[in-house]
Length: 523
Image: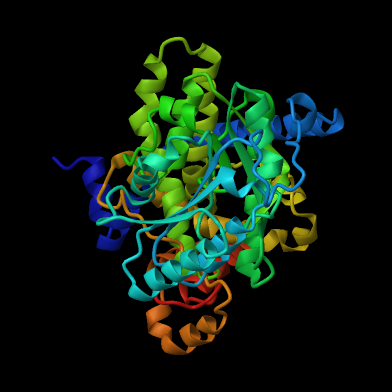
């Protein structure tokens, strides 16, 4: 005997059956799953808002109370009649390391700036760690070192047989030379960094007069910030990092992630923490965390800034962001249990490191930004049953965005571009974060960020050498298509104005996808 359900299906055609199955799948599986994801994203959004507000509040209080590093720490200038020429025994011995790898466009600038530092010549050793494989780059470094040696600078050019350990390996090898034994502090500058002549005079006194300090970190300023829209956006993000993240960590916890350059370490603290390790591609952050767990404190001095160059090609910027997202995630995976099990460290310190420093700021923020704003939120336009509250999509993001933009008021008018471009970069940062957590093949990938220095003619050469197909980036194009389809659906069938954001964000993905951002180079 035929049942009523049999009769129902007999009356349906093939397309009707498919439609029925899809409709049931939608209500039974898709809507509940998406609803759970939206609720989870609301919680994460709130956590990010609390963390950003907490850091901003700390910085605001510090500014209002005028608590500069010079006021809360002991700082006294070293006395000498002529610090450039006369021997001065009251100046501590300082080693200055400049790691270089095939950076012929900028290496001479860094070496020259370091050799011009105002410090007694007999109390300073400049150590150029040249891992270059390019003959032209090696020759430039050799000649530059020879030039400054002839002018009385105590400069050493050290060359390794291999690049084992990359930058960490070079720094470690540099510390093993016998002439380093008499040095008390070590300053580190990447090949494109150009410190002012008074850098050591302003930073070393913090370490010399405050025995609890292991690190003095200076801020950055950028010689090519106005080169293109992409460099302006980078400047906004980095200014926030220093003005809010680094300053709040320094002021409240005496801890922040070492930026790998433009800083001065106490060598005894560096050695006590185990020295440079190459287990991840963020040897700077690794060392900072280990030193902090050993009880050392750091200070960020925001009124000292070192000139450097921002990557002006998207390819170079993408590789840099991969390293800056993959490395911390991988370090978190390797150090989480080490932090938890570390003895003689307060629960407050452990909680701050694991939750605030690593989990929220190095893991969650990257994945959440891309997954929610570029995948989940667009999908909700197809499911009107799911309501996303305005505080999640408008109020909290707007507040966090304004907090970021305040650090660079001159570029406030670029805030829309900053939002859209940061969401595009969130895709690459999410990928890097997952690679670091899962330790897949690219987890130890180290690509030196390409800088142009004074060789601006290179830009014209690159633009003419690469055809349109070579510039295409299909991941960005595919995400752009997804966002555009969701936006079109919302425009035709939806009852919200979310399509405005979706069309703008899809345009940003398309622009990056066809290579019209920064300096065109092949993907």
